[in-house]
Length: 285
Image 1 (tube, helix red, strand yellow):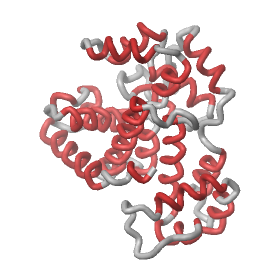
Image 2 (cartoon, helix red, strand yellow; image 1 turned 180 degrees about the vertical axis):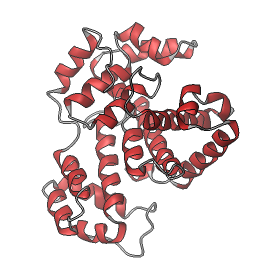
Image 3 (spheres, helix red, strand yellow; image 1 turned 45 degrees about the vertical axis):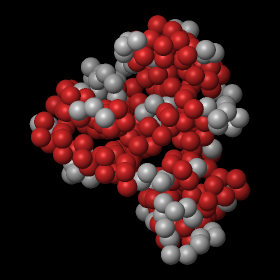
């Protein structure tokens, strides 16, 4: 596995605080575990989710939103699984968990974190769609890696008081994001994200994608997944800014995926369509 730098001070301080915070509900881990079992049944999913009434209610609220446009109102998790399938419910559970990770329990009015969460969701939707273009890529794995790629940002924002206000001033002045974060807070979001992901025992694929979606590591075990997340991350920013997509593509990611400029432009169209088609999804939370 890639050996990531671990700056002293900031990362250790944040990880120490994160240990006291239950960011991803236990039910999320259980749903991921069950949906990876070929022998699992809708009853297994129902039993796992219904132990957390609040989480169960949120799943049903999103399932019954305009995004899914189901033919009838769904009133149980078992019914939701039967209509949507295991994979869709797995992704929904992870998305709700990621929303809590970014927004927390008491600060959901944070505009900065809402922007980050919407970006992460867009990157995840784009990654899932684009992964289906590559025969060797797993769409569900790509979705998960992209959804969680920026988890270090809310950790920095939550635990370094005022740090991100200073970082954003430097970013607005043209300084690269990672450099601005390190200069103002002592570590950047990839370093913090990796430390937190390891603490939560995320699989190696997710840890590496979190750590290498901006700068590739020297000994990556999953370079194509990291490149896919990097590509979709760049495309999402590009779409929001209205800039030229090909200029935004990280060269290393393009090489790792084996795509030329024309193929990168086609990939951008795939990503934009996936984001546009799911525009109403974020509003369901």
